[in-house]
Image (cartoon, rainbow, N blue to C red; front, side, top):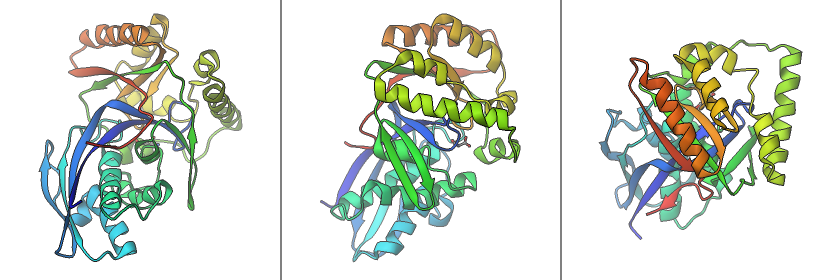
Length: 306
Ligand code: HSE
């Protein structure tokens, strides 16, 4: 095999209560990448379609992660990466992670899979850090492992795969404003109140329990964020009114997707997810801000070979 074409999915990080640790993988939106094994040594990017991103390896997240893996493995060949970017950078659904994870996944396949998914996450983290100026793996892990994941530790990297509820659907709205992850992280306080921390870790624990016991009711009760959302929601116009309407419409929960501006809701069943989508559209069509919405099942596979 001298080349591989892959679908590298969008992801929702944090899932309200799990800042920097929880995430899940989407099915309906993702980048496509073609990775070629070439005789010339080194890593290069020969095509970027969709968005204006740097071709220099050291400035491109897919390039940085690929280079980290390449230097560690020292293979007897080189790689040429083509990126067909569908996930808008700065949208809050793991655009940089899809690129960073895709390049290392593709190279690993072409080399006969010398690395496991945890090791791939370790190298992809180098690319992600370029985008957010911090090593967090809560978008990378669901893109690479699929389903819901919990990043127990980044150093050393340790990812736990969590089960997914069978009839769980996500609805997303992407208001067309850009929020840089680094800026959205910078507005968070360095310290949190003990009472907020207690609420947060009880919600993380109960969310994990809900996934293991297929309990939609406990999942719903767990989808609250006392740490990041109270600060970040100011960056997203109409967040409170949208969330209020979405919950009234019957969603299990609603929160900021990653560092925003996308907002996600989780619903029991596709019919409810569609209701929630209509509700989101109603709220935002009354504003001046362009937006798009979509529905997705949880993608339990992660990156797919096309
Ligand atoms: N956990 C990260 C954050 C995800 O919230 O900043 C970024 O997509």
